[in-house]
Image (cartoon, rainbow, N blue to C red; front, side):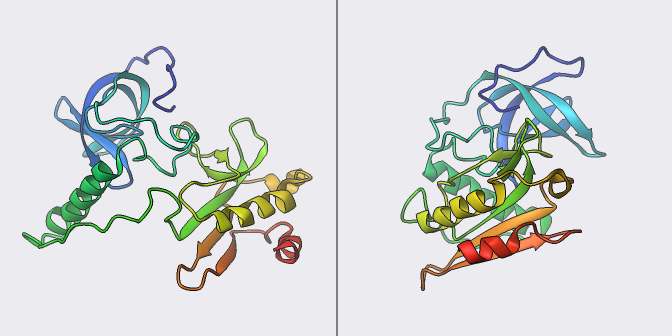
Length: 237
């Protein structure tokens, strides 16, 4: 459930959390009764009502039921899918704040996890533009929240389902043209039921654009069955 969702009535184990930091993978980190919680979609300064999804030995994986008080660092994200799509959990923060937390996450991995002591780390190099800078995006093929065939990224509310996308703001527009071509070939008409069985990780569409040459590599990844309509997609591209 995204932070823009008013939420359902609190469950019996719902917990109020003050989010203190960001952890690897874009999850907000908070503590309750001495236990660490990781909550996707939450950012430092948020006060959230969360429920546990998985209880581990040393931490809890939760999800937001309700955003009780938004962080003052929050902004209106440039992408309308943010909050539903799990691809860019930090987009609600300004680019400077994102860079700060990415640097802290890297330092934490080196010093606390890697036990390397005080590591000298230069400032992160920010992309020239806040959008269109990512050279690789991997999309899933599978059902969306309503069960319809989709190409997109994992849903925040239902990780086993996809948010259907015809454009990703973080990849180059040329790669978005390839994505739209793939949607036309792979989803119109909708694939038969036999091709839709399985989760969104069964078939993966990987788009990678070279900044030096401008060429785009299209990778079709499959798990247990041949990638559907691969020949038609190759011809269309």
